Length: 217
Image (cartoon, rainbow, N blue to C red):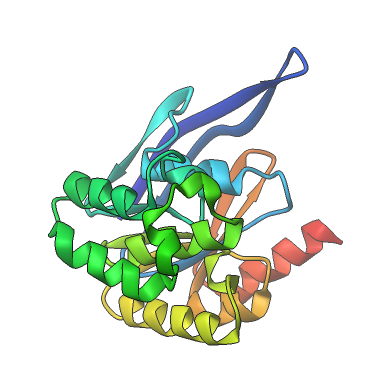
């Protein structure tokens, strides 16, 4: 279970304060794979970062009774000046998992070749997503936060990524941001719609998708 209590986040843009998440309170149940839906700029990635703890809220808090991944697919998750391998070792130490095992898993899965031992600053956005996805899937979390990452790479890599994600979902939950409703329907069984800093939870995924599509129309 993830409980969000009176969460607020704002940014200053051109000298003005813009509230992205507005006094949001919401309980996300255990055992559900949730689609996080909303128009571009609604604050989906911001909310994922606050749930993971990588971004501080102005006020409020997020409570969880399980482990939560960082936002998979978020390029800023890793240090630009460290190599891919160094970043993975750092992550392994933070989360208390075997360093060599995680490095070996990510090196094999991400298919980065020699670039795995080069600075992340030299990576394309797709390479960064492969690295972050591999590192996250190499650790057994209770909830995975996923931001569009299953769309990365060629057809073979996409297929491999989706298969691994399905395997993880057999024993974990997810909160997924994805613009493809086909992929949302493949991986999710409930939904949250974010609009004007507020969110609504739907036990029925199709109800969430219907509201999302009405907002966009």
